Image (tube, rainbow, N blue to C red; front, side, top):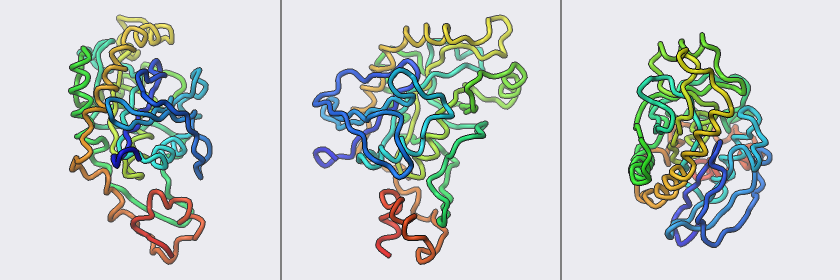
Length: 291
C-alpha cells in the first residue's frame, strides 16, 4: 500500500511493454506459491496514484500465451496490495465495424482455452465465484474515459473470444466465432479475468484491434508483421490511455468484485489442509481466519 490507498495494477501486453512516467520507480519480484511471475513488477506512482506494472509476456516477449504463469502473475498483484487491474492486449477483429487501430473494452468472454490452470482453488478447498459479469464496470468506465481523452477510437462492450494459441485461428474457427456474435479474439485476457475475480481484484481490459481475423477473405490472413505495425502506431495512445485510467480508478467504487469470495467457499474450514490454507491466505484469509 501507498498513502493508505490500494495500488492499481497494470498489465502490458504485445506492443505495450513499458509504462513510461512512473515516479519513484522500483523493481520488485515477490515470491508466490504458484511459481515465478512473467517478470519483475515495477512499482511507483502516477499522478499520485500508487501503481504496479507487469509485462505479461516478459521483457523481450519471451512467454507465449500458454506458457504465461497467470496464477503467479495475479497472485503477485494481490501480494503487492492491488485491488484493481487494468490490462492492455492485442486482438483480432471479428466484425467489419471494428477495424484495425480501434480499441474495444470487452464486457463478456468466451473460453476456448485448453491447456492452462485458471483457478487458485483445489487440493482440498473448493470455491465457485460468480462470473456472469466478468469485468468491473467501474474500471471499464475509467478506461473508456481515458481512451477518449487519448484519442483512441473506442468501443465499449462486446465479447472477447479467448483462444489457446499460439497459432492464429483457422478460417472455420473464425467464421464460427462470428456466427456466435463475438466481437474480438485474443489469447490471454479471460484467464486473467477469472483469476482476478477469485483474488477479489477488479479487472478490465483495453483490447487493441490490430487486424481482421481470417474470416475476412478480402484481406490477407493474420501476420505477426501486420500486428506489430499497427501496435507500433497505437502504442503511444495506448500508454496514454492506461496512464489516464489509473488516475480515474475510484478507490471508493461500490462494485462487487472485491467481495467475490464472500459466499463462494464451499469447503468446511476444518477440512481445509493447513498448507493449502496458508498458501491461499492472501486471498481467503479474511474469510477463514486462523485454524
